[in-house]
Image (cartoon, rainbow, N blue to C red; front, side, top):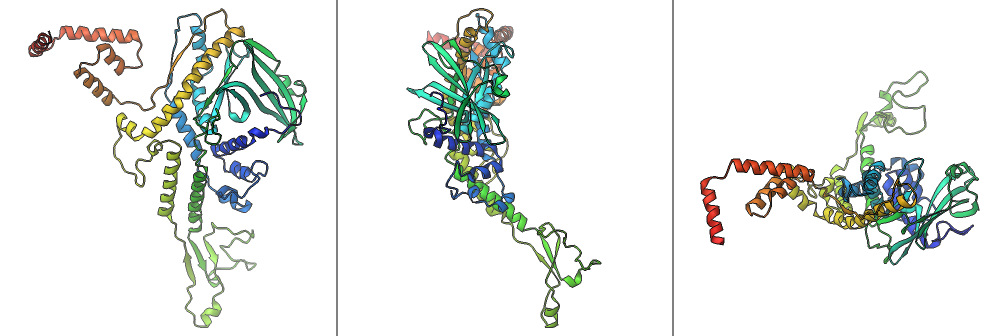
Length: 514
């Protein structure tokens, strides 16, 4: 993936369709209705504006009444919570040379928070890049940052990331010109080569190349081409899930809600209809004008005449002049109440059904989002950890699938961090690069009752040691604390031996086994 040619289309034609898809996913993920309206009314990214969708059909005067439910953001946030709400465990030798560098990297970069944020973006945007950079004046360690697929053009070789071109808009002029900074990461033998270029173009054209010192936004960064003696690109790509149903055979991932955008659009349509029912259902009074007092200039009291616009929050409105009808003997009520029905039950059931289908098609259990049972808010009491696992099995399967992409990516990133630390001369002394084991924790918290019942059943089956029982009861303890507790238990058992009958029974069992 080389640098773009001056004057070429941007993004490239072979990537434009997928790029437009990601723009659509980003708009839904943002939760901002104005971004949805702008997106679907754009002839640049969606030339066919008649998409048959609610947001594409909205006219300018109707947009103020649109209501958006940010389901896409909820799905992405839930995905991240299932993966990293509990801190993952990294197994490595902390006492070995270089072990402290790994520990400091995790702590100084807030790595656990970075993973949580990256997982949410990956669920929304089909994947995410974790990039390492060196800035000695800021941190004496490699710095990790998150890059979305909307800011990268990757090139894969045999399913592996081989080159990647990062880009971002660093400046927008008043005349519509855009300054884009490109960063190309490629492999040159056993070296990582990082190159930079600046282009001045338009929204859909890369434009002409410019000097990095030509604008303040890049001149102050001190960017220059650099090579590091290390394999890899100093970054990893984590796909959200595969296969990519939009591009079969592509190593790019697919996001959680790419197949349910029409359902999310229908949910917004239903919710807006519900709010419109409430608006139209506001009680109003139609009053004969003869019953209303007039102002000094003949104006009607309780009627807003200062503005020609209709005020739906006004309590009373002037009815027609009913005097001719009364003279003709017609039975006319001088005051009449008008209030339309609000279809609460129909709208609620429709919204619930759509939400149920959305989260299910995204790969999650409705219970994960608070839906106990479809069609009713049934259920009493708080379910145990085991019951939660049964109810949320679909969510747990999706989590396990995603974790298989995250574990090798995190392991590779931490190894590349050590290589960059050494090659960039950040480490105070040389050390041997370590391989790490990464284990993601279960997001379902096991309660004490379930844990104690498990320990008791294993103990009765004589299938667990005292050390393992203490470890299961206190998973946060280190080995020294566990050994100390085990010794206390054994000492207490020696001071209080079991009853004579139990001892005799155990001896008989041992003799029979002999």
